[in-house]
Image (tube, rainbow, N blue to C red):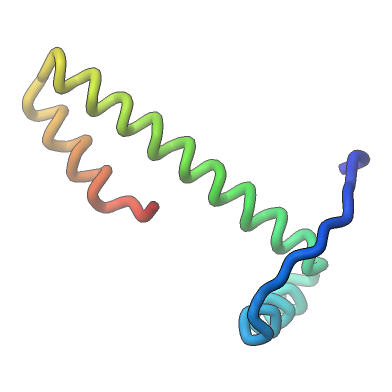
Length: 79
């Protein structure tokens, strides 16, 4: 990442301690840990939006089994 910027965030000390512990175990920087976390969350939100759009489209033109399966998957995925 050549286009790095430095930011300041406020988080609970207990969370930072857990992040630092995980970072050490994974042999990565705290910055990299937070970047991976943000990327994962963004990807999950995108996937959820895509699934919601799919369910909406299939609801308009339903294949009832497909809609049931997609709704079940949507209900099982965390936000």
